[in-house]
Image 1 (spheres, rainbow, N blue to C red):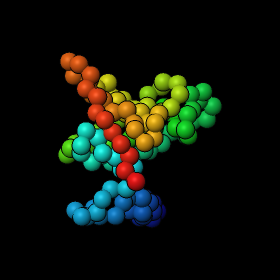
Image 2: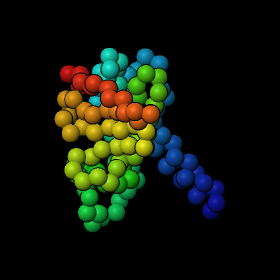
Image 3: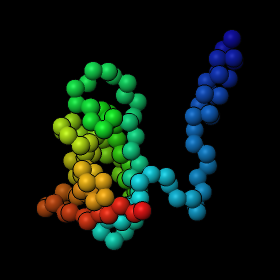
Image 4: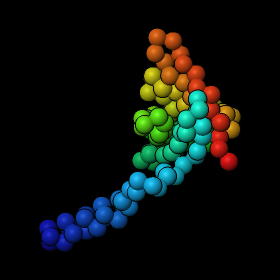
Length: 121
């Protein structure tokens, strides 16, 4: 019985894993150029299945996140609980696509650094 249970768990885990990564394969997601460099934004609604959360916008709820790949850095930013268009921040980095063609992307250091972004066709 235990062996059958372990086999079922392994099947579920293996089926849920993504295929092997390829060095020449571009990650899927929205493509942008930010401050002159390519950026990929991958939105994920996370494992949140709570209903009745009042701050739902664009199909996201608190618990959703976005992964940004830019300049050799991968950032996973949680969705903020701000009203309106979904925004994502970890306190240092901020991403918001109020204008889908020109999202807001910035970083807080001693001052706030703004990066000009444009969606690629």
